[in-house]
Amino acid sequence: MKKPLTALAIEHAKPRAKRYALPDVGHPGLRVLVYPSGVRTFVYRFRRTDKQDVTVVLGPASGPGALTLAQARDAAGDARRQRAMGADPADQKRATRRAEAARIAAEEQEARRREDTVANVLARYYADHADGLKSGREVRRVLDKELKGWAKRCVDDIRRSDAIRVLDMVKVRAPIQSKRLRAYGRHFFQWCISKELVDKNPFDGTAVVKEVARDRVLTDDELRLLLRAIDRLEWPRRQFVHLLLLSAQRLNEVGDMEWSELDLTSDTPIWTLPGARAKNGRAHAVPLAPISVEILTSMDRVKDTPRVFASFSAAHAKTRIDEVMLEIAREDAAAGGDDPEEAKIEPWRLHDLRRTAATTMPRLGVDVVTIERVLNHQMRGVMAVYQRHSFAQEKRHALNVWADFLANLSAARESNIVKFRAGA
Image (cartoon, rainbow, N blue to C red; front, side, top):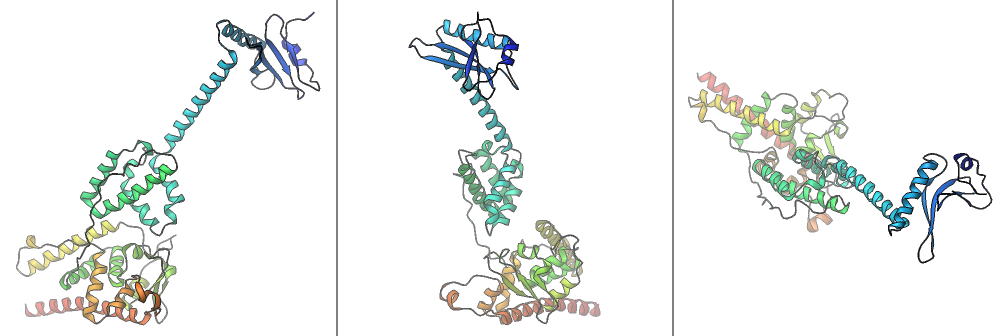
């Protein structure tokens, strides 16, 4: 005579060559399936109106997470009640599984979304794309600086109004930076779309800042004032600004200079800018004038870094230069009997020093082709194909002439000071 199942009977059920079932007398449809592997599973079995036999898995009857016999009987009872109400337990089971799967997927998606902050996604963007570009360093600088306020926000929370607001704020301070931010930010969010992190690009449809080519060139008097100001600057601003002026190279290229790039002991001292750091991607040899060598050899090396200059803000350095130049201009005004408060400094940028060198050199007898080589501008057309001369001597002569010109400006000022004092 068949009897109701017991926990002991389930535990001692021996596996056979084929799967078999142990019915639970008194609980219609409930049974335990015993597999050849020894695994035991509670199931509820019933027949649909179309005569199709259906098995609904209730849960494990052995091992971790196993249902008790009482729990299995309750689950089977629920299935019988569903049938009595016209529902299909198998369909209900599938619907429950789908709902649970959807819930888990939604929770996982939300967890991933919370992790997809602007800061985290930017790091992935740099590694996946931007760091492989020649402009990668600049892309990092602009996005890290200008999108700092978004760092903890999820990328899919950023709206077009947010992009407009940050672009307008940057435009007031630095119009060209605003243009760069729009370009870099737009590409970043397009990358986010390709990774299915966002649906829309917040920078799409934002206004483009018109870039106006600068033509600011410092006069000889302004250069003379700058040279006097350089002498009053603190380390490393003094050496940095002086080398920036003497070399006529780009701001970031000088700022990131490394000792390994310098040859200061040969008869022809030189700075070799690697292609990875050059704007056009080509290595560039910059001859060093004697005064440049003197500046570099007198500098102490910064501990635990290959760089010549310690990290500092170029913007803060420029602010300090302007303060010192104005201070000196007011001193000169007072010495000449003028109102110091009337002294003013016309606005200029550090990059204008490069343009000033290029504009002044022709006055000193340097030809334009050599100047273009000094600036590491890429030659175009037929000349780019056939011109293979290194211009090493010509560039050295040009930068030596430029350094002498600057030294003479300072010397002329000192001579005037001596004459003034003697006349007094």
